[in-house]
Amino acid sequence: MAESNVLVLGTWASPFVLRVKIALHLKSVNYENHEENLPESKSDLLLKSNPVYKKVPVLIHGHNPICESLIIVEYIDEVWTTSASSILPSDAYERAQSRFWAAYVEDKFSTALRRVLFGATEEDKRAAMAEVSEGMVLLEEAFVKLSKGKAFFGGENIGFVDIVFGSLLAWIEVIEKLSEMKLISEAKTPGLVQWADCFSAHEAVKDVSPDVDKLVEYALKLGARVLKATAATN
Image (spheres, rainbow, N blue to C red):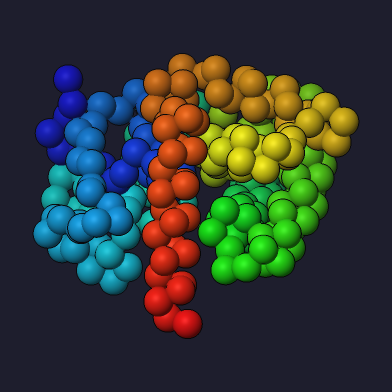
């Protein structure tokens, strides 16, 4: 049964919301899910809870709203310390490395993924695809270093980088289906192939991950909406 003092404001298709749900499941924290009707509308609760960005996800713990997915995941790790293993490493250097790669995924990689799907021009989409391919190679190298031969970026257990990068796997599959290109492959990223299988099959992940076919339909509708809005401004 959901704890009345833990509420997640989100939407099923958002990888940023998925990060929060995975972290809560890892820590065995029950919560109530509030599905926002995005992009059509935003609830009064969302606007009140995140008046600055007006975006999901928002974690409401008690009466306190916490915004931005990376901040929320760290908050969950710090508050629920007795449940499961730590999401961030205890070693200061390893913790810094995890934050570095999480920031890379957040600031550069996920932005390129979005441009592949919703770029303004075909040229922009092709350039973004090249960035994604280069990023996969970098993340393969990071996985080898951070995992130390174990199943996850976090070692034996799912860690910070696993959550941040892994939340994008369903959207990566969407791009693979629409482009008929493999972004994660045995030829170029063998470590990530095994990692993706382990991550997706994890108990904390598999029940909250979105259906890829449903995401494809959503992406096509959202792409048409973006195209229409772009045309209207030109």
